[in-house]
Length: 447
Picture 1: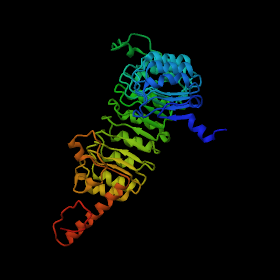
Picture 2: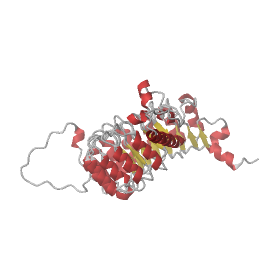
Picture 3: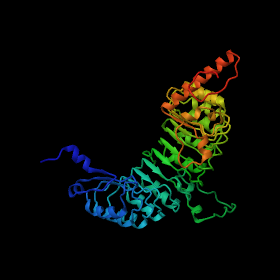
Picture 4: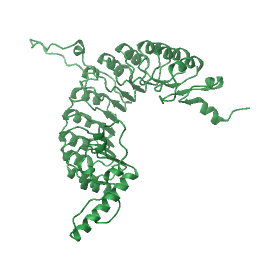
């Protein structure tokens, strides 16, 4: 008797468990183990790599003890493999990645964040898998500009590239903003400064092609990057939609001006922990990239209300992160409330000058607002407000839990109703010349 088509399709994709029968091993095409608590270990996965020979995609991010042997067996026994996710598999090394490169057909996506690789492996991936559409190489302490240059040179079909938290990366790892080398004038000239390392002697990466397919790029927490590197990225990948540069402290307004050249293509931008960015850069950005939907400017301490005024004018902005922007005042919050009807998520934690009065106006006016973070905001510690907050994360200490304020979904509406009620009580108290006393419940009593 033939099996129902739905059952066959379900068997082709197995999630958070291993195949249990010969039939499943013969049919399965996609093996996904993401949950680290599902009880699957490398000891059990390794034999399955030899039994399941029709796998097209494998996700082992939930098997953190995955070994080189498992990856080698997978590479040797599966000739149809198209994608592999080994995120967080810290026991995987260059040995199995080199075998993967040698044995498998050109992969379309590869996620190796947290797998500590050397330049040799990264270069081999770039040169051997020209069809890669997605490549994730976050948390790579040993990866340098040498191998990343090969990614830009050979992986020309990439749509997503993430290289976050790779501390060795410098501007020489990125495409040069110039397209040709200018010949040096003849005659005597002063000697150049002696480079600190051999990596500083790498010539500019001049590419004849353009990364027209690249849409998502993450270079967060690469502290050696400067404005020049960002200029090269924008020149080489002019159609980026999402760009993450959080934790790059050397970036200035010049980098923001380069990013602004992306124009209408840019939708998501993260510039958190870039302390040298000022209002001038954000004004230029907001007037050039009018399709921005999400902007993260957390810990950009030089920004003032002026930057928020410009961002509030963006028609499609739905997420704005302004955590620890100390110069922010109520004026910015009032302006956001009155001019940004599309706003859905706003993060204002540790903005000390923001008061509860402006937050009340915000939640009452922004009808689409579904998430508001106000941790550490003095006004949010008012009596009764805390009961509408989401529960604090368990890993916070008692002091952090006491100031935690995050309002989501129905709690935003409930908070608005509570503040409306308290405003009405205050007006009644003033009309009757009675001292106003804040309440934490929903009662309208003045005493």
